[in-house]
Image 1 (cartoon, rainbow, N blue to C red):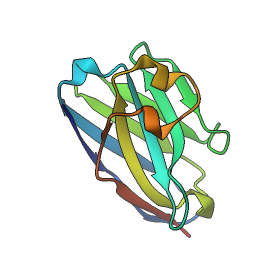
Image 2: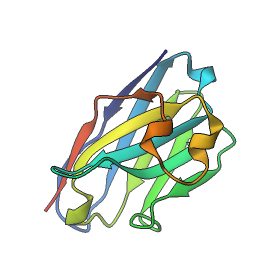
Image 3: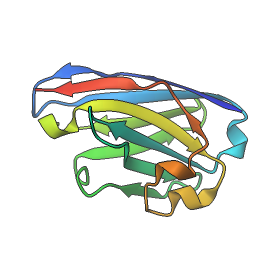
Length: 125
């Protein structure tokens, strides 16, 4: 089992930045891929970014050039740096971990992830 706890969300004006954090605990070594997803009211959960154990990253087209996913293995923490935020970025942001490395294959598919955090709200106005 892997436990994930997100933090860092908030309400900001368009154009500003936020950094989300996700602290992982438990059987972390079993997870080859970690990612960030988001869900706006009335919409399906969508992939934002993933990062493989080897550092390879993938991003949704809507956030490329604005968001950066990274991880600190010593702190067991996943980050999402979000710059130039837009109202369309509003939603609940979830951290996720996958045992299968294929989850980092670029499709950003939520169904490939095994563990999820409770989410942190991001509101951009």
